Image 1 (tube, helix red, strand yellow):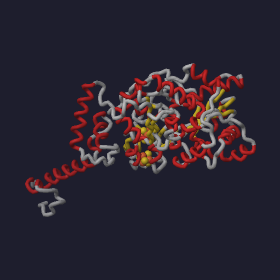
Image 2 (cartoon, helix red, strand yellow):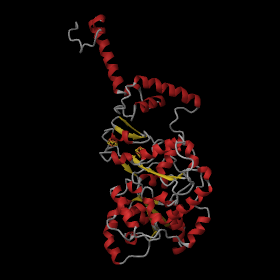
Image 3 (cartoon, helix red, strand yellow):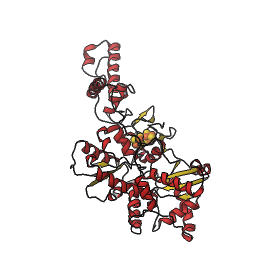
Image 4 (cartoon, helix red, strand yellow):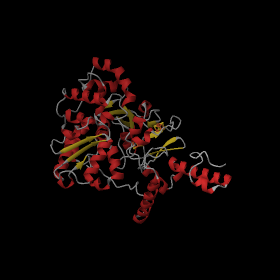
Amino acid sequence: MANKFFHSVYLNGELCKGCINCIKRCPTNAIRVQNGKARIIKEFCIDCGECIRHCPHHAKLTRRDHLDLLEKYEYTVALPAPSLYGQFNNMTDVNLILTALKLMGFDDVFEVSAAAELVSEESRRYVREHPEKWPVISTACPSVNRLIRVRFPNLIDHLLPLLPPAEVAAKLARKRAVERTGLSERQIGIIFLAPCPAKVAFARSPLGIAASGIDGVMAIKDVYQILLSYLPAAEKNPQELASSGKIGVGWGIAGGEAAGMITDSYLAADGIENVIRVLEDLEDEKFTPNLQFIELNACSGGCVGGVLNVENPYLAKAKMKQLNKYLPVSLQHQEDHAFLDSGELYFTEPITYEPVYQLGSSRMESMVNLKLVETYMKEFPCLDCGSCGAPTCRALAEDIVRGFAKKEDCIYLLRDYYDTLKKSQLLQETGNTKKTMEGTPYENPGIDR
Ligand code: SF4
Ligand code: SF4
């Protein structure tokens, strides 16, 4: 069974300076700095990549596969994420990028955007047939799914129970490769070119299915330069490999998936803080009951904002909009409809609540510990300065209750403690109770010594 808290984001301890920049940026309060080094609490982390974006010392990194993976298989298929297309200047024909992928060593390519068109079609059907689930929440962003799993249990029932496009692409690509080559499934390597760490984590530890059909995940930024070098050769002899249109390619930018729903009753939010705000409002029932669909992307701008891309997200978004002008609306094939009807697009495992933020194993224990947290909070200065290594005073109080920290980690309480200690030492030295009680020796230089 996959490790349900597997993460692709990790820390290089040698590079970490303990500067605490990352603890304030983590949307799930998953980072602590202790003994001068950051530490990620694996149960809280959702692989959003914010800490990678904001670490000035590049100490947060993403686990991923590298080019040598190609040698492991007899036949390899690249699954390029739609956001790959936004990394190149003046791109009007995705066949050039797909041809360059073959020139760099892949045997075949299968666009994730082609699978996205199938997911769009099935999503429209699901939303139409399940008004009781409105608003249906997209499950395309793995960080959002992980966030809902640990923090918004009441919203789990609204999750769209469909595989993300990369998983659908993996299934279709493997089937096609077996048919074309006669090789066994194990001899074929399905390799996703991903824009973000969350998608790497999904392939290793998926939600909604027992195991991923993806054999390896490479970062777009790791293949980008190689692809650039092959583009001139691809231009001379481009192959007709593209099999998707605007609807599928649009999934790479914020609002693209929602546009594929072909409804006006939708909401699309991007950037993890905006996503959290929408989920909180949804939990508070602030939206109209007629809202049908919610698209949420943890990265600003959508998948083009992922930290494994190379281009600025806003430039990439503009480039993809430009590219979309040259694409047909959608490019589906006859065999795709058979796949849609097979039900293979659906989750096979339930997504269940993981109560990682609870303060106790029972309701009673949680309540007792919550009271303790409130007691600590009364002692703390509530400046959320981060000097203790926790992002907020409340996070420190909760860590103390969980047994991960101590009160003296708060530098303000520590200072008070030393002041008191100093005073009592002075008292012992001078034996002058009355004068020391009037003020500290530093404030009252006239004190008898
Ligand atoms: S931002 Fe976090 S990971 Fe980076 S050096 Fe500072 S404490 Fe370490
Ligand atoms: S990846 Fe996101 S959730 Fe995980 S530690 Fe970094 S900022 Fe926090």
